[in-house]
Image (tube, rainbow, N blue to C red; front, top):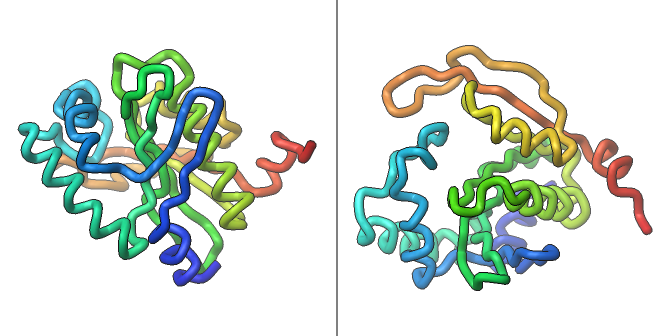
Length: 195
């Protein structure tokens, strides 16, 4: 896969849909919905970023993302729960390795929607886009050790736990052990045969 392909695809962020969700570009109008979960310690405990300190920070972050989207350099979708017409999290690619046709994915969901299969539904949608539209060979996801809820989401989507990397990242001033789950295109096709 070529870097130019990534820039071209994501500079016109495609909208994706599942049974309950719409995945679309984040907008400044999402600030209230995003701040509702992004300000919480329990949400960011196992993430690489700190809670948003105030609503203005969230709004400025979303304004900043507008330029990143335009340049095709941001690959994360807003997850909108259609029954409530509410942005309840994000899911998307955090990075691409174009040389090896691989990518990493990540996600976060408002705790009010935990336990309803939302993260898994969004993740499977992004995996499908990665394998079918971007023709990726491998997609991986990482989680900080202790975040078994996230590992479960990955494995339920067909990703295979490959092991832990000891003290692999420095997060919020401390080294953390990181688990890796991954799925290959061949695995995806076995789990999702064409109709």
